Image 1 (cartoon, one colour):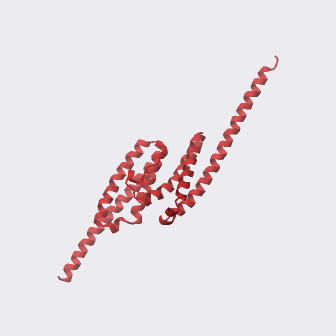
Image 2: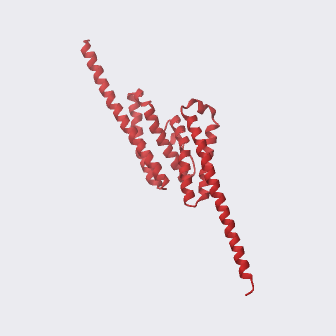
Length: 216
């Protein structure tokens, strides 16, 4: 075979590979964008709209799986993992808010490692929701968010091998620990404020009754 023919064939294959790379990048960007939008909608309690966006994102991820069969070297990259991570985070957060339960990686078609990394990031979204609930006066809801944050952290930290095997997980857990501590402080302050307000209202009632009991 002539060298020119060899190089021409390599060039054609390289161009096709580059087209697939660009398609993967487009899918990844779209998946990440849809997942972030879904998280925003969950914070606004627009659950059905968030679900629709994530199901739309899942179509693109299915396409990624097909492309991986052609060029697995392009599929297994940090870029693809980050998209799955954001996607998993959005689904986990949605299920916690809407049903108070967790969803498995199999249920959403996400690889295990991005799922766990996304799970760790959910702690940050729960803090944000907890603060929103505090502003709305729903201290009980904020306490519930804090409890879920702590549960996620304890469960992940209880599986030592995951911290070793999944790159970046320990760093995320270090951040999560600080986030939990800050949230615990915020919730505690609000609980004490509510207790003080309730005590003052009770005192006002008692003083009001005593004043009405005085002889005219």
